[in-house]
Length: 426
Ligand SMILES: Nc1ncnc2c1ncn2[C@@H]1O[C@H](COP(=O)(O)OP(=O)(O)O)[C@@H](O)[C@H]1O
Ligand SMILES: [Mg+2]
Image (cartoon, rainbow, N blue to C red):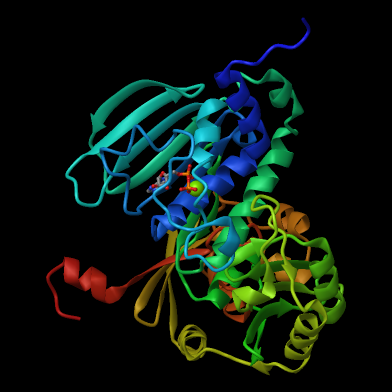
């Protein structure tokens, strides 16, 4: 007798290891669930590159109290759909295997308040086993916490990459979903520090928030295929982000094709929307690859669109710029030798002096690291002239909103809000 049949929980643990191979896979599934739940805010928190801890918090519809101890069971799903129309259905999920897989290979805490309920429920699951269920007070929405991924699958755990590699994968993933969903507020925290904060905006603002550059925009539609691209040319390392019918796609060959069309030194975000009958449905959902039927003609249409598409500039951006660039400026002072306060037009601005100086250096020198090291640090007293100089330079920036690492440079309050708080009409 050599053959034995593995017990079901061992089998499902091994199967789970196939669906979820890394912390980034977990983050991807949880973000997709949040988006499926119509969240407008998604906050991702990780420590040790997600190997120790992952949390994804959202303000979506929440999970019904009767479902909370079922969602991590095999095949549990509230979503309709089938593998056949993978790229035409409304939601990301439908297989009901993500939470089940995650539950069987981690210590999982799910807290959720359904939108029609006054309180939430939390369940704690270890290696697939429900250990507790209790009431919790919380706002509407869901938080899923995943600790010690693969604690019970040591071979897999050893297979995980170094902390910074896993962290970069997660950051990259958050970027992708943020680009695909600009109307959703995304935040990423790593080891207790905020590393990304992307308030809701239009696709162009989202591009700027993610990359720190203002893109050119091309839009075209032919033969039922919509092509929208945001591009910045002549960057050091070009990169293509591709979305087909709203989903991040990682096809090598398709990206190579786009690189050829757009140029190798181009940073681009390309959205393709095409009828589902043109998309090859025979793809594995996890690999995020697509193939097109009638590929030659589809690619032809895309090439045409990208090379001759119209440029579009949204009105709101123009309005906002003129406001910032032409209005009067008065430096109010400095808080804790770190925050420069200025009155600009009808706003009170709070600038992070280090991030602002860093951005200015960055646009001059082009290198993130150099800019960061050379820039004025927090905790340095600045003269009035220095502060005015900084803000004058700020007004000339290509991207006056975020530092090279994506953190906001300033926070502003409309004077009207301050007047209101004081009971005075503005
Ligand atoms: N963040 C969330 N908000 C609301 N419901 C959720 C959330 N995450 C999971 N769920 C519920 O749990 C179910 C199972 O999730 P999952 O295992 O990812 O499968 P699928 O997404 O394929 O349905 C979902 O169908 C949904 O009903
Ligand atoms: Mg899902």
